[in-house]
Length: 89
Image (cartoon, rainbow, N blue to C red; front, side, top):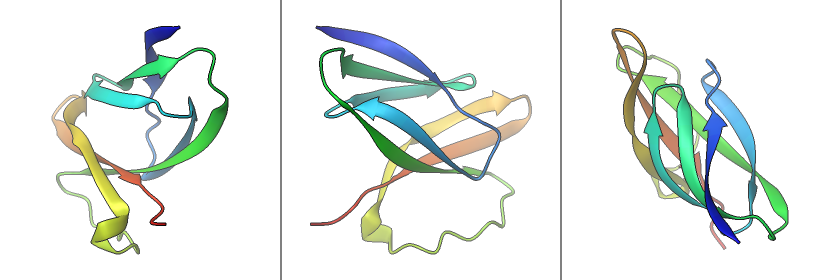
């Protein structure tokens, strides 16, 4: 069954989430990522980078391995951007 599910975004430059295989991230809002997920699918660990507008944290990955999820305002004045680390086949 397909549902829209909310996942917490931690205050960390790098983080992982266990999402069902095939999950479609819809949008980041507040301190959450909302995703369309199949409740019958098996879960897999997915990896993300969270960078703020004043971030100097390096991402040591080629740009083609990054999927931009979106920008949002999770912590007051700070604007943040989430990138998913994707594995190229």
